[in-house]
Length: 379
Image (tube, rainbow, N blue to C red):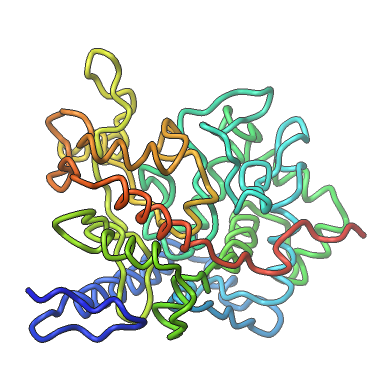
């Protein structure tokens, strides 16, 4: 197969349909996200879903930045100015934790590209979780949330950390009671959902609606690849892009997909990379297997997007790799040996120059953080 021209927004060479296939796969991926988010919302509480489809206020259009497709929006949770403002307030409110010390933003910090910079998440009373905190940026495009995919939508994801004893440790009924006791929250919820008591599904919808505005694109790569700006990438980053896409070298794009019109840098699937083995060669975390009980999912975790990857260290589901160099060294080593190791994980043969170029390319994926996404002004 002829090698692709790596100029901005390249057309495939004759007989090379890989970019078109990648775009078809990613478009199907985005459509599936929208379908699952809508159907799961309806299945959870049909009566509330019907009411939520009539959120008060004018709908707000969420514009996707360069390099990203339109964000999937569930039919029962279309954003409005009031719903986004409510979700933003909740996202930064420590009232949603048992001891009033943690908010969603405690682990998803805007100054850390909505990750936390820690190896594993920290909950109330300094408790350590088992997994690294993924960024919320571009989470709107994920088919399944959490490393193991146990939540099928952002709405379902929201409620998990609030009640988790090792995270925010606030039972849902207590969370709802707290907010109902606050007159300002009662008024704000009424402006979004209409009259009625605050309920957990309304809390989840509001926070998820805000999180869908957290889109990050228009990176140097996007300006080069999709905007036609030939000077947006350095020579090293352009060489790194070639390593990234070359099946005989990096082969990174096999899971971190780049399309002709946009790039999510993920296949949305679950893979065992050989991460998280103890000295005896045993898996420390079973990953997706805990949800499916399918042997092929043992030790498999969701493919994260690589957007902003240079800003969201440490890496892997257990935060065990501190730098991008350590990540490349891990892949050059071929992962570890276990029966469920993904068939695409093979030792990479990369020169020192190719590794440096690949890191330069990954650094070019740092995009813009959306405006008005930080803590809201206090009344």
